[in-house]
Image (cartoon, rainbow, N blue to C red; front, side):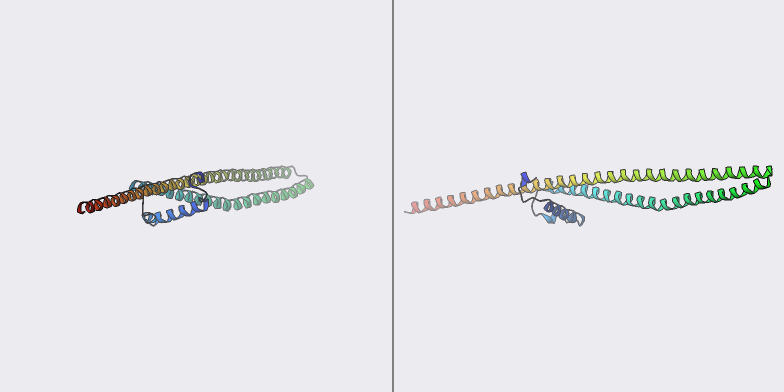
Length: 215
């Protein structure tokens, strides 16, 4: 855009002008920023600002929703970890108890007690395996949630970049409008100056004619 409008055009200046336009748009005071410009240009600028305002609000809503989802997932992560550790500890405790029972059964050499101890050991092993499986499932779910959150963050970043590009396009259009206004104003002033000079020339000619007639 500097090739079109000169070195005086800066990103900070563009941003400030955009912020001023958007603030005026939200307070319904866009017309007060410029005293000149055609009605068609004013309408087009209003439509562009309205579109930009809608895009900014949509991006803000999506960003807020994404943050809320991340907070909920973080709150869910800690209880899942506690449940997995508690299940594993309970399984280990049961396994230790089962080992004591098996020792007592061996010393008594009672076949019925040995069978009961074997069943208890099998049940405890199943509990430990179930707890471990639950922990693995929870970990996998957390990884899936993290991947989904990263994808959402990438999508939000892409949308933010698209909004930035749209802002630059709006600023470029605004500068084109203003340059057209300046050129039109210059042409009008030129026509007025030429008309004034022509009026003065004709007035002088009339005065000279009157003087010659009287003489």
